[in-house]
Image 1 (cartoon, helix red, strand yellow):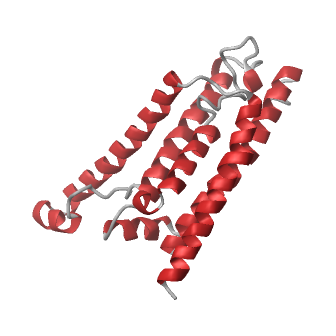
Image 2: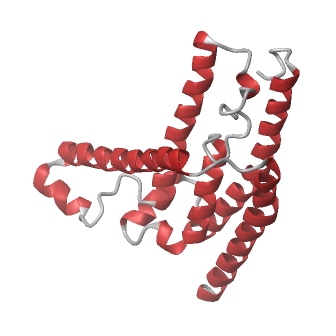
Image 3: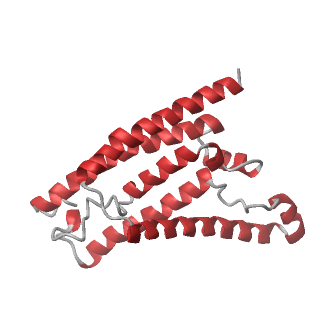
Length: 210
């Protein structure tokens, strides 16, 4: 979009966005690798099923969840990582030349991305549709499978809405980083932390299963 609008400022903002994506995709993937070491499966249904019978993954991987959450903020271009847009400045970012429905589609895609990221975090780290502090199987025997499905869907929706609220809360609270601060956080902060988290997880798993 920044290149197609034939605007140098939009193209620079698009390049900022591309470099930001690279610097945050890596720690996000490394945080997921540590989680996959615990679960032993790439299927989200299996990851969720293991949380139904025990503790949520956020208790086993708090640092991994924190890294994933920060990276999700950056992926969705939310404050303080909204450098590709920078709507508070004179330059409006990569969609500077767009208006009406074209701009609306850009913004709609960002909010869809925020919703999907919230659902993924709720599923991977917070038990997904599991109702906290409730035995879902016993509850299903009392109220029936259909009502249980409604309640479990509501549980996943509530967890997702909480994450969306946190996304918006951070946007109203934290000022934007400078670009050098942003890249330093990605390459010198989050990637080393995610590597350390992955190595510690691997050592603990090796020690438990030796």
